[in-house]
Image (cartoon, rainbow, N blue to C red; front, side):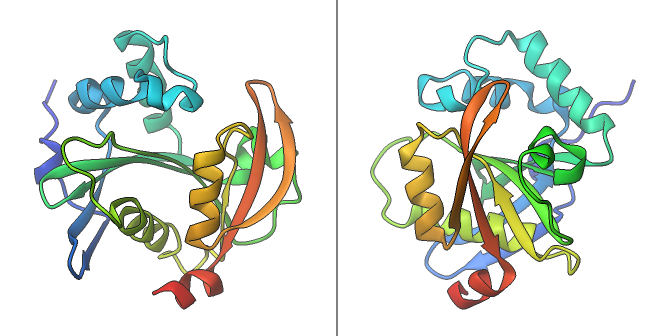
Length: 194
């Protein structure tokens, strides 16, 4: 069995220099190599809406190995310079349970994201800059015309962040694991931000 390269040396699927912030690189997740980082993030209390707070390392590994086996769902880590700053998952809504909860349009791409925990001093603009890079990547494929997210309806902090990023709120939906709030970010809205 070959070992996966460390995340910082993997080929980036997206790299973006943000003035005054740094370089954001997005790389594919390697489940076994990234397990410590991902398990640490998804089991923190602040990540309770991610739904994996009580998961063991083995359960988290199994989930990300399963995602890695799919052609419709993908997982990525984002780094600002050498610092891991986010976990990003992309998916095709028509191949996901969320696709049964709203009218999927051609060009829709789904996203789940988890911003890393803050360490040290407060950094104004940090989350906004990370979001800009993640959404720029999500819309970098010309086939993708609109990003769809569905945060837990109780997660007002995430919903407010989506609105500040340019998402338009949709209706609430019921999924087996949560009541969620749909939100949509069009390519046009994102281009106005950049």
